[in-house]
Length: 349
Image (tube, rainbow, N blue to C red; front, side, top):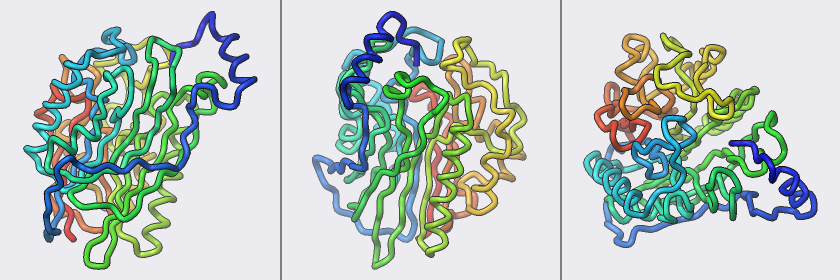
């Protein structure tokens, strides 16, 4: 996030005299959604599972934080067009469970379109749980304004429970930046079928931390799923971990790197090459590590350059249950829809 320049002292004074003047604190509350039209369906023997960072309905618009452009705010028509394309691709896949990251529900930058509700109303999914990770009445930086953005889990079946667990903030940021910045979390929803439950988990970990925040977040996430596993609880974990897999051939100096301002540089993962290994060693990945090692580029899921091509993998699906072998796939053909490619896999009940 950009420094606040001349208004720094004013903001500091305001924060010191008021508890939470911009309402950036996020509690454990999870918002539950229903589609405008509920489509009844029975549980199949397998679930098609999909995860996708949808870039807040921004498509391939060049925003300021990627340093390829300077856009901050979208027109409503742009958001609707981008969301229509997203929902079209989601209908094409027809997932039973959809994990999404970077979904705006009440944000100035995306014309206040509730993107979780939009996707429910324009797909065959019926229910959703949403947890904020970036929320404020007003963010006085770069014209961002009102913000409510986070992660969501969408399903054809109703959840019996859902909760939000906070993750550590970036401690190296100054007090004011940290106050307005993203509050990362783990969103958990419980799905029951024939007396057995599956915990559905999604997260979006820190991208721009210059300290060990992301490593700490990964450790907490691993401990979280280990606890479920030790109880014999089945889970599916999905999200944008902002971390590369082991055996990544390239770990720095990516061809889409345009930022020179340290606030938005996320180009060097060379010290993180084994941070994801504990997940691969203990749980089944939708894209097995040996497959990634054999051909990195086939499984890349992110680039900031709309005129380039996917150049790194940062998106994941893991389970302690059973993904059907060879069913995992990174859908790289939809470059125009988001700056992330979705991953799909089939889970055996």
